[in-house]
Length: 156
Image (cartoon, rainbow, N blue to C red):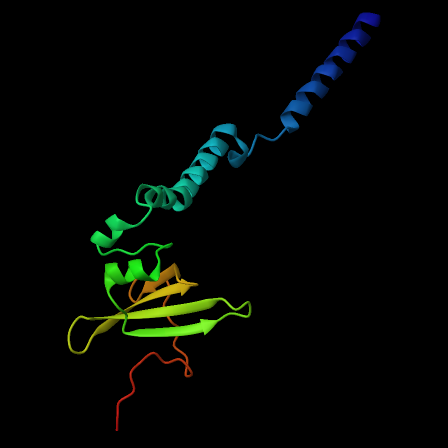
């Protein structure tokens, strides 16, 4: 009788061990080590290209002479360097922040023909270029609102 009981106990333990492994769920795809390594590598490469690459370009040309010769502007340029690269703007809007910092918006007009003009906008803070965009780039298009129509009104 004892060998039968021993066999039942062993069979019960085996079935319990088998059922516990059967109940374990497989590792989700996103939690697998190779997948995580690929994702983290992609994020690292993206950060490198977006942040570090422009800094390397600036370190190679610290006084922006190459950019000026190619008529390009880059964040960090002074107003004088932008004037050398692009010339003077058609409009300059000046404001001051609550902290007393001087901000300027330079607007350049590019006439394609007598009816079509595109604008380039540069933003300076205390004489240093901090950003910009141009109409048609898709980066920042002004919203069409009644208070800000951005369309020329016919003169009557």
